Length: 348
Ligand code: DAH
Image 1 (cartoon, rainbow, N blue to C red):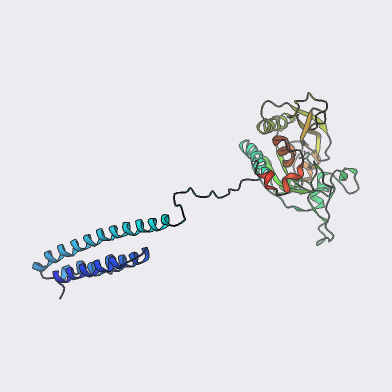
Image 2: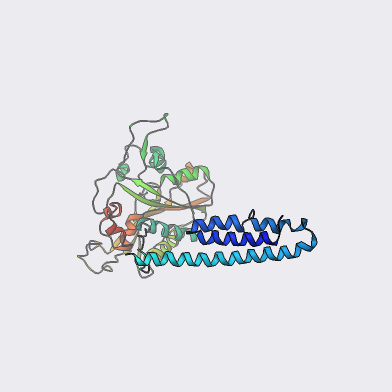
């Protein structure tokens, strides 16, 4: 019995329904019911093909017009409702034109920022970043780095030991430095090697302004044919220049670490006094601030890793991230970094 009258009846009926739809949800329900895929008008439009040709045109036009009219009505009604809602809101005590409250935003921890910068410098020079275990065997942390049991060099690293000995593999400890990853990496890879190893290290030490029981290090290792002290200097110079700026002077002086020969330490001149103040509290009048230990990988370590030390040479370095962050930002006490005091942390 569908006809033009039925379209008109539907139009009138749905207009009335629309006028009664009082909120956004009612409007949406109305829209799907009336204009949606299984709506009444859609059904009439779909059925046009089965109609007698003389009715088809007229009915099609009427249904399309009705649909367009209802769509206009809907848009109009939506505007009305939105205006009404806004009017209701601003009539109350709420000022909807006030700017929103900013949400507090977090930021990266200064140590994370410094660590990422160090890794970026080395990444640009072709070093891959790898990580090793924090719970380590004494074999890797000490023996294989030429720091045997009962050797006084062990005193350089006060150690957290675990009580139990698992499966006879050796004693477990919290690694005191990232250097054991040199050994682990060389065990499984052949030269050429260019890696950096970031990670947490632990020392059984009383804390003070420059010592924490936990700190982060970045280890550097390069092994290849023809690597010399010049490569060590060039790489570490570049690292210091990028971290501290080209205005700083860099000093390389000899030092001792059992796993390198020769061993050196790298220092930059004091940012606080430029090396001019004998009473400076930052460098204690010494002019230089040590930022890392380094050296040429000891040939015995290369041999123990199965490398021919006549063919391959390498350099290694290790730096403390907190120490570098302290020097860059002028932080006078390492303990600030891990006290979670936002008054301190939000300055970075
Ligand atoms: N592992 C040393 C430490 O924690 C730092 C270090 C010194 C690393 C010399 C090295 C190196 O790779 O060659 O005190």
